[in-house]
Length: 614
Image 1: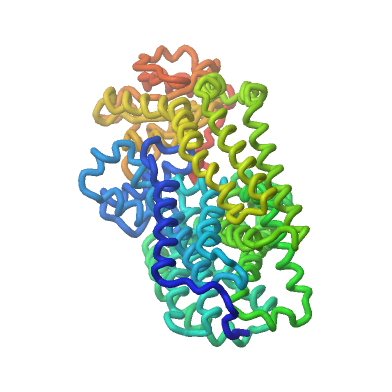
Image 2: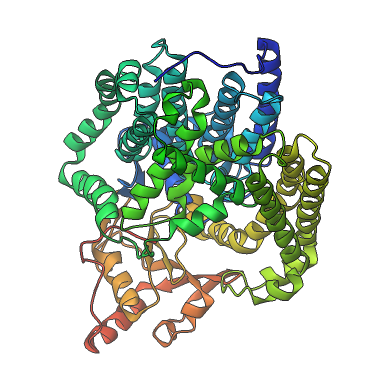
């Protein structure tokens, strides 16, 4: 039930604005600095980026398409935002890699989450918090510095956008209840519609579970119902989000229904897709890693939320404005329940829980004195111990970095050690542990910010340069061979990629790419697809027909090229870079080899009905 606001430190609008400006500057630095300086990371981001760019170039804003095929994986909001970024004038000059436009929706969504978290903590500080502005900045940073957030906020996929739209919606729901006012109650449902247009009905399910748990912990279902108006709110969400689904169903028909609702929603919940089989306890370790090094504080906050469920009427006495910690706990538990029950599990599914985890961390850490709360003292001690362990692991990196073995990045261990970037990271984590220890021993305020400061520096001086190094080792060769394709390709000459499959090849060449694997069936498939496959932007033409190309460009990695069935084709090697080579292969030789393999019992597999996977 709602109640009068208790005594708290009242913040003037000027003080709140200063706090938000501080958070805004940090958000800009953390999420947009060098955003477009590296290429897209295979395998999924190039599919999103290519779909968004195709919308901008073709004017078809209804159906996302990539590599000549409809892409029904996700609803259109992330593609629309990417497409708008690609539509900006002169993007080819200031965004030469095409990655700034693709990553901008993720970065903006995380920036908005930071600001909303900070503003909520500024407007509704906990009783007894002498420094609510400090708590607000620390809460925003607890979100931004999550390892999951740091990675996915710079990745051209829809996960960060879902996290941002859902977190804004849920925080608006709580603020409406906490204020006891129905003013702008509809805003939360508009934002929920954006979440539904980002990743589908899962956003409504998570909202429903969160609000149900919160109503249970507050023992105030009527109050929530009266203030949030869920029936009218869901109608708003439906009116804003359903038209695209209905239009897509009318235009694309059964394939859209089967792929989006059947495969990407129902089947992901009820069965394992794409071999993402994980044990039921998978999200326990993800929860731990996603909040490092502040996981002990998160666990303490969750434990207090669980204790509230067992309380007898205690939450009835707690004013609504002081229930943000309970709401955040219900938010985390809703994701834990839903995705633990789901058959398909991925680390990115946890991303919408990170704003709630940040609230729990900040609100748990803001207690003025650990001496009066021995359990909090222990959790702070474990937090600093974790930070020190991470620092120690980085200091001894010469022992474990050589163990990294990735055939696509054979030189990574040597280059990483030679760069000195890991030791920069070690310095940052060591400084964080020492500053935290100093504030703990001297019982100084601002303990959470003291630890977070060096971690912000870690992101700028170590993590981003590491990402650039990884891009140079892993993705630069793909871009270079794509450049060779563009310069060497003859008009009408088809393009294939065999073995190591990189969707970024399609993104950078702007050509339909026929992808296939390393097996003998892959060779037989390629020969047949060149004659028979039909997709938007590619029409297979038999070699005997007029207008067909006598050759095919083949991007192939060195391990696949060494296999016996790819030997003896006498290709014209047009270039080599990294592990990749670009061949021009005579189609007549390719078809002869395919006929020989088929005579030996090798079957065609490309005609089997299946979505294109990489």
